[in-house]
Length: 568
Image (cartoon, rainbow, N blue to C red; front, side):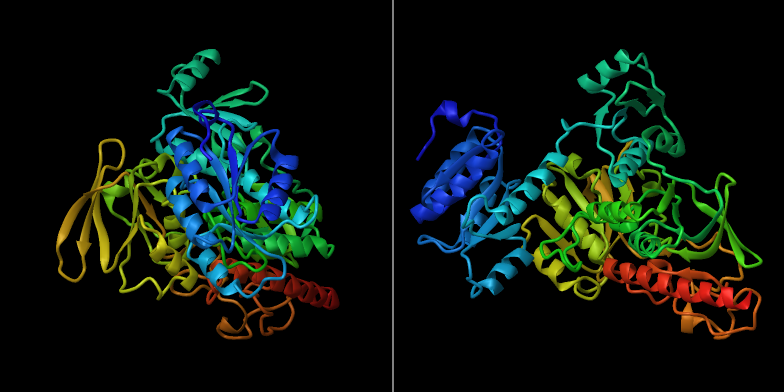
């Protein structure tokens, strides 16, 4: 069934479903029309042939297909096969496989298709009206799409030079903080008009225009945080626990600590989420079989911590930690001192720098340390490179491949599987526009104002080659943020904090001036100070492990505080 030219040229986003059974198709259509027709165009087809024809016409007309629904079993081909063909026509559309009620026999191929990136979701066929389980899947997909749109309500509009490192830094900060924002380049029509409207044509950039009209020009991160309401803090009195670091480990500790009645505050030198907040999709976290964005996961954790009464303070890093009798004092970058009974170190670790002068000079201007969520859409049609072979590198490559013409992974070792989860290796293998170059390193790069080319070396042959590159995303190694800690807190040769049975000697810690004793689980060599997550020596660099550490650390805090009270 081919639409008329007038129908094809409409701009309303489209939800398209295909099912060969008339009754089932009518049920799908009823559910979609009743809930979404006011804002989306609903298209239903009864064969894969007519559905593919329709999709081809819609592509030619420039229509935007948001979601594709397909029955699992059909005559001409399977739903998975159809969704793969449909994906070639509309690569941005989300693919949902519909499974009959009670049919678990096909679960393995379906889950395999999901792990290979051949489908984005699977859902049970709607069977009643309204079927809220079905709508839960649909609305999640539509919400994710809406959050990516620039026209959504924003807290701040930002005008800056696109490839300016400061502009990238601020946009990345806003993205990871979960603040809706709109960005316009200074040389765009929109940016030019806004700058004249607020009488700041010459900057200094970036220029912030808050929702109420307040204008800030190149504010510091802290000034921007205060103006945008990011910080929520109160440092008066004595806390039961100060958590340093707002990644998964720190937020987990805040949730468990506050929920168990401890007066808790989380501080971070940056914003919420840590490295996890830069992950586009975490697939191996318990309870999210089809994955969740790192920023979304950490945003939920933050809301949960707030709901239990935890305080938070960001963009003021900790610079010192000392004991004062039974109290511990955490000093922040602006001189603020927070008194607490216990401390949890959850600062995480950052990606190692390449240390190549030409590339370091282009950080924020085509060279990025992290997963590239902020810059992904700007990579449309570009040649992009990812350095790294861990899960974060794999997630970044898959996300960037949705936008870039081609993504090339640069891997120093012999195989991805040595350091990357199997599900990611399979997805990378199945993604046509991702190449993997093993036993290869980046040795140089260049560009006039932004990255334009890279120099790669083959470790086997020693040969070098220069390749065009619009962007380089670096996700290698881990360097803990522990240089600010006092010498009394033991660390290994790489700077990771020693805790528990790893402390040498094992009786180093002492509670409240008492006799030396073995440290508690996750306790450091300073009594009452614990470490959780990636900053801890011997930790498993996974989100789930970090979250577990956060919970365990609170149990140890309770044990420690009990001992202190007994000794007083």
